[in-house]
Image 1: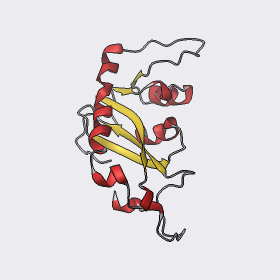
Image 2: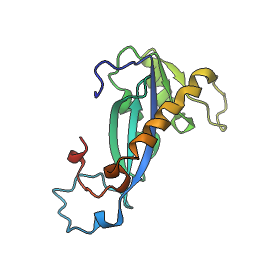
Image 3: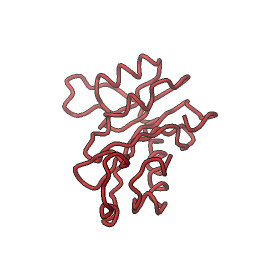
Length: 157
C-alpha cells in the first residue's frame, strides 16, 4: 500500500489508458527484460485506488485492452476500515459488489441500465468521484507517463 496513513472512509476506483510514444517501440526487443504488460497496441492501462483525500493508495498496470473491472478486486483486497467504495458504471458487476459488501463497505456504484433490478446508490457521495478523475489528470501531466518512452515497469515503482 502506498499510503500508510490513508483516509479510507471512501475509496475511489478507476483506470486510464496511457499510450506509448511512437519511439518507445523502436528498441530491439528482449522478451525476458520487457516488463510493461503486453498489449495488442502500444497502450497500457493504469488501474488505481485513491483514498478520500485524493492520494494514491494502490495501482496496477495491465495491457490497454483489459477492462476496468479486471483489477478492481485486487485493488481493494486487504484494505481495512473502508467506509465506501466509489466507482463508475464500468465497475457494476455482481461479483465486485459482493466483494465490497463482504468488506462491510457501502457500494456507491451507479447501476447499469440493463440491470433487471436497479440498485440505489448515494448520489451525494458519488459526486466526489471527481477526486480520482483529478488524480489521473494530474498524473498525466508528468512527462514519463504522458509520453511513456520507457518500457520497464520497475522505473515507475
